[in-house]
Structures are given as structure tokens and as C-alpha cells.
Length: 201
Ligand SMILES: [Fe+2]
Ligand SMILES: [Fe+2]
Image: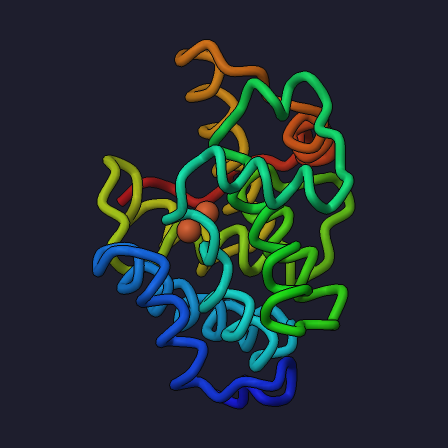
């Protein structure tokens, strides 16, 4: 992977940083998301190298304690809205984009946004953002009940995959008593008329 197109570090150096910051399972997940993002990028017309790179580093802040994630965000002078403060699962994405920019020297805005919005999604996502969002939900090791269907659906249609994925996430957040937040709400709204035509096998 040509990581030096996007930051001063080689692939080996980036992988060493990842390994130092996360457990083996999450490292494997990162490799799988990179691979899956590259595949979806090729299929749906996003930049393949950017997708692989963003996929590789998307969870770079997920393995650090939640308080540290929050402090990365606060040090950046970002004040989170109430819903995001109530949703610790979103913090690593925001912190990850900040860390990638400042510590890894990533300047590409689309890559940074793909990291920033990989958990919440948002309205009007770029193709790269969409690809990384769905690569994260459908990476090879994912084994939640609908994982294979979601994978096949995303291979059939990126938009149907997103519609299905965001509805599932919204339902899950509701069940667990977490707010959806404005970005996930915006994505749900944008995709509300997308019909799922791909049948379960
Ligand atoms: Fe994540
Ligand atoms: Fe992830």
C-alpha cells in the first residue's frame, strides 16, 4: 500500500503504530477493512489507494481509553453536542481523524472525513466516505447475524447496503437507549426512500 502518498510514513511504520495502539483482533479488523474498502472502491468508483489507507487507519483511536479519546477531541477545541457526548462509541472516529491529521500528518480531507464519519455516517457522504462506512460494517471478520447478507447486499448495490446498514444501526441504537445523533439521522433521512430489492438467500 502506498501510504506515503498520504502521510510521511511507510506501510510498515503505520502498521507498527496501529499494533502499539490496539489489540490483535482490532488490528486484523483494520487490515480487513482496508482490503474491503479497496474492493468496494474499485467496484463503486472511489480512489482505491485512499480507501485502503483510510480503512487501515480508521480505528486508530478505538483501542485507547474513552477518556483519552475525549481528551484528544477536547484538546482540538471541539465541543461535542449533547447526543455525541452521550454516545462514547462515536468518539474514536472523531479522535481518529484528529490523530491522523496531527500525529500521522494526513492532509487529505476526504480521507480524514472518511475516518471522522465511519461510525455515524452523515448526509451527503462522498463515495470514499460511503465505501469506508460500509467496509467497516462488512469486513471479513464481521459475524453478526446479518453480516453475510449485508456484505452480499453491499456488493449488489452500495446504496442498498447503506440503506440497510443505517436502518439496522438506528434500530440498534434505539434498542440500547442511545441517541441517533444528527449525522446518523441525516443519513437515515437521505436514504429513507431507498428500497431494498436484493433478496435474502
Ligand atoms: Fe470504528
Ligand atoms: Fe472499525
